Structure formats: structure tokens, C-alpha cells
Image (tube, rainbow, N blue to C red; front, side, top):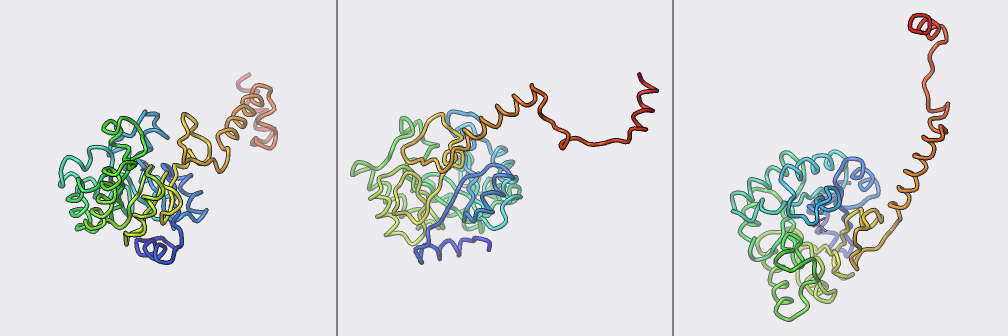
Length: 279
Ligand code: KIV
């Protein structure tokens, strides 16, 4: 059954945890969809996990549309959310609505996600008015890495903790259907989850959220440049891939691959004619 904003809201009401993973291409989206994950996020983590940038800031609208369209073709039941990249919505309400529309029309996402609290409420109101569901994102918002002085846990002092509570309440008020809580203390995230009507999705925010999200390369042990505290390796796919690449290298060099069963046949008479003419 296709996940929708209604089924996701019901999951919160029933205490049925929401599962979300990132994907950036068709084949991984298909695997995640087949595993029964509720939401696929085409995150701007694309910049680091797929494109090799140091942060998410260089990611463009064209990057996001291209990868969102690939994911949408592979997602049958999962609800697809596309991230709005840095400077595609902060600049004006017009830009926000226009670019959100492109992610839906050209990327075929069902919703968009943008970062920020009170400062982006005008954008959230305008986008939702057009009929596009908005997932907000508060706490450690990676597009503000320079303002935070790095990817650091947010909300540990009273002022910042209050600010995050206010941000979460204001994005709900502005019309967001869901909010991501990134890298904030577990008790703060649990409290926000308790006071909001909309579902919360945590990443580095503990177990009290309505759901969880991880970058798929992180949870598969494929991205090992660094390992945030909240990441758990559910498999060591990175090691398995390296071993497979090494076996391929060895078998090609030794001639063990391709074997007879991997090759196509031709009639001997045809080859005799070819030899006669060209040898
Ligand atoms: O870009 C992303 O993948 C995200 C998640 C980490 C929440 O925003």
C-alpha cells in the first residue's frame, strides 16, 4: 500500500514507528521500497554520500531533480520526499514555491523537505498553499554548518533548547506535515514529539521520535569517511563490495572470468567463413 501523509499521521497516532531511509538512484530505491520502508528521502546528503563534496552546500536544483526522478521511478509504495538544496528557498518565498514545484513536477516527489524553523515559516505556508506537503527540519540543520561551526549537536543549553522547541511548534503552525529532528538530545526530541500533532523523524535524536531516518550508505557501512555517534552499521556492505571488486580483479587477470557459462555461442560454419575471409 502506498504511504501518504494520511497513513504517516495515522502511524504517529497508533504508535507505529515510521521508517525512512535516503536513496539517490533507481536500483537502491527499488530495494528500499521492496523492504517495506515507509519513506524514501532524496536528501541533499547526496552532496557528500554520492558526489564527494565536504558538505551539502554545493548541491543544485538540477542535481536534486535528476536524482529524485531516478528514485521516484523505483519507489512503488514508499512516499518520496525531496530535499530543497541550499539557496533554493532561503532567497525568497517565490523561489521556494517555484523550486518546490519543480521537485514535484520534474522529480515526481510527493513532498519536499527544507531546513529551518521560524525563519522559513513564510516559505512553508506558501508551499503548502499550493498543495505540496512540506517536511520541516530543525535542530542541527546541515545547510547551516558554517553558522554552527561544524556538524555539532544542537540544543544542549537552555536558550538553544527553547529555540528548537519554538522552531518545531512554528513549522507545525505554518503547515508542515512532518518534522525531522537532527542531532539534538534525546529528552528534548521526546518532549517535542509529545507536544506536536505532526510526526517527528529523528536522526541522532534518540528513540522517542515517531520515526527514524538514516543515510543508506551510513547504515550499510559503505561511507566510512567518518562515523557519527548515532550511526549503526546494519551490514558491512562496504567490505563486501571491496571483496567482490578484488575477486573480479583477480579473476579477470587470471582468465577465470568470464567462464563458458557467461559467453554466447555461434555456429562453427559461420566462424569458418569468417576465418577464411579475414585470416
Ligand atoms: O540530506 C539528508 O539526507 C537529510 C537527512 C540526514 C535527514 O536531511
